[in-house]
Image: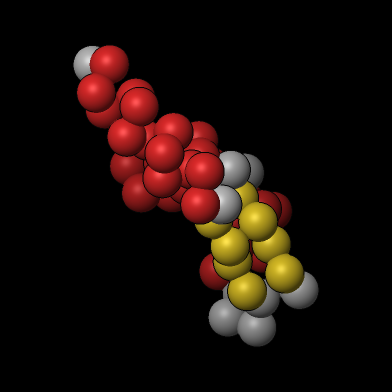
Amino acid sequence: MNIIIDTHIFLWLVYEPEKVNKNYMNYLEDTTNKIYLSSISIAEMMIKKISW
């Protein structure tokens, strides 16, 4: 299955994985799935970093 995650889910996975629903985490941990992150997420993270 192909899964695209948004910026806040990506940040949760990196910094606070306990916030991700267990059912969703099962999909994300399944190595047969392909996980994608939008290129716009990189821009969003840079904007947030600059505004801090």
